[in-house]
Figure 1 (cartoon, rainbow, N blue to C red):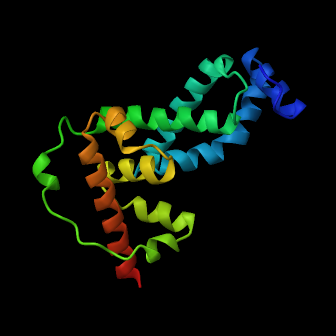
Figure 2: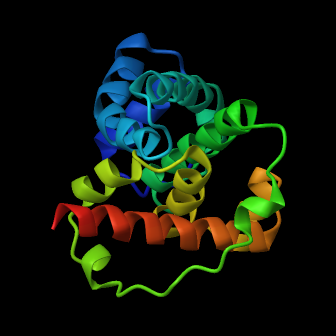
Length: 180
């Protein structure tokens, strides 16, 4: 493991790998608020986000020894939780996505209202989206996945990913417009 952490962080990770329960609890306490926020971005129900949070930590502790110290540790952890959320979503999503749901052409909207929202407002607003729109929006706009990556992760076409993202943005703009 490369030493690109403060000695406390590196020793905390090493202790977690060694199975030290106090270190594992400390790492959980440090990461759980941020990772819960990541999970909440994908699910409307907090119970689903809590399930993904717990599953994510199980995966984190089972795979902590695989972290090579390259790049941001928090970024590596975030990737585990995003992938866990995607897997959870796959299990819950409908068996197929109907292509006729995406036939309408969306009108263009001014993006300035969306651009000016604070993160909490965006998170709250995205909770009102359908699970498909919310998942694609968060993967693309928040997690930084490409539409090609999203299509592979979710088992949908790239054009469906793009359409769901555009519709999610339009829905968010419409919700913001109703608040104004």
